[in-house]
Length: 87
Image 1 (cartoon, rainbow, N blue to C red):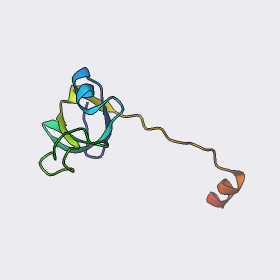
Image 2: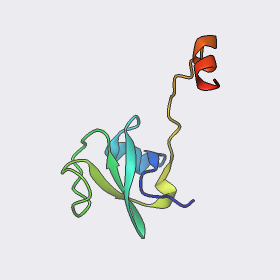
Image 3: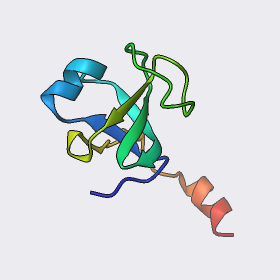
Image 4: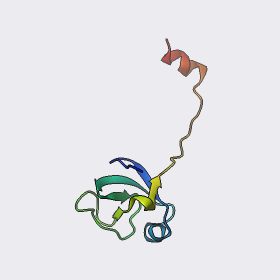
């Protein structure tokens, strides 16, 4: 899978989950062979050579991460909101 800077990712390998945490979500900060991920929660990582704050970064193999499915609140628009948008 190809990853791009800005993609939201999660750990899927046991070894990476053990390092960064199962619920920790990150953002791809660099693609340099390995994928540099700036994780949302500090876990004792590093700075990814200056791509993120110290303690949050980790270089990951592509096979150890996957795109994260973000939870969105899709509240249907009201008739009034739709009328405003389409008038």
